[in-house]
Image (cartoon, rainbow, N blue to C red; front, side, top):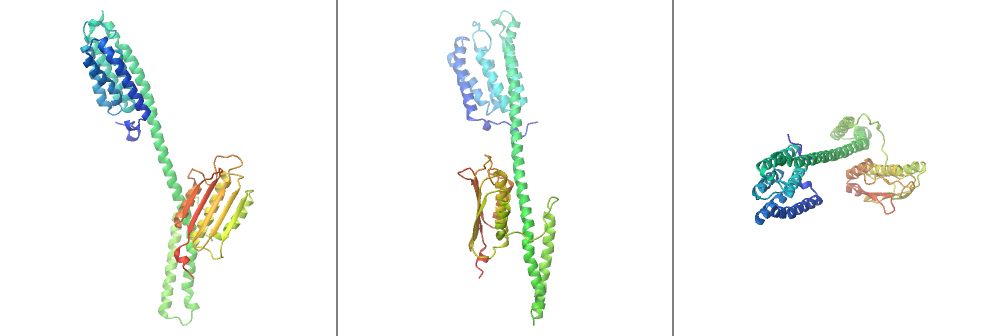
Length: 408
């Protein structure tokens, strides 16, 4: 059974450096084997050049088509001894350069193909070398001496093959672990996003529930507060009150689904934009140098979702600044006009020399996940990143809905 595709080493994974090494080996072996085959073994120059190029060309080819390259590499391995002159007494019936080239082919196969193909390539090559030596016993005084010349090839190629298989297996396992880490990281990010969305939904439940409760109370009490109310209009108000009560019941059921065992947030009023100064004061009590620039005109609160998002963004940014840049001065700027609420939280570099800075710098941490989700909820934008002085900055732009802006 073949290994999974994600751990199969492929030629496309080979780096430029590997291709350069394979090409250099091919050129070097070709430049050495062609003269040896011509001078030592007496093979015609044209044939020696053709076979030498074919043989050395198998080294880069094996990285792309291992089985085809193995089949082609066996041709010169068997053909060169047959073409050499019988009168030539060479050290081995098979040239050393030919054996080295075949060893390189076997080693590369171990990296780019399965271990079964690599072992078959070694067995086939060894069998052909033994067969070639057996067919040329005249080169030596005794056949067993001729057969003994295959031992270095078999031993060296087997040793290098074992090392290559171990390294290849280690490489495949490392690729698999890397892929599993990537999958785990993606799942972790997805889980963090879902947790933040659930937390935001639980908080917004209180905001929406308050508005729905007001609607229900006003609709149900209209016939008592307004005199001479038409019966049809009173019935309409009763329907509105009933619809509001049903909506509140369904929202409570949804909140029960969103809550988990670790969720202990009680129902109650949620903080808003005008609660940020109190948050700054409470943070100052923890010996953190925090300054607030408050540029909020008027006393009218923005929509509940925008106000809650503004508060939570400042809260998350301050929490991360305290955690990752302890002792660093932090500046909070809050401005509000008729169109949007703008927030900026910037901290200096930690006095303790920590490499991490506020707001989970560069890590996409849990705080930034929550900020992004809250900003997207109200249709705003979020910018964050390290500053030139080694600190961290978070800037959020929270637009106010047009329907609210247009109100008199």
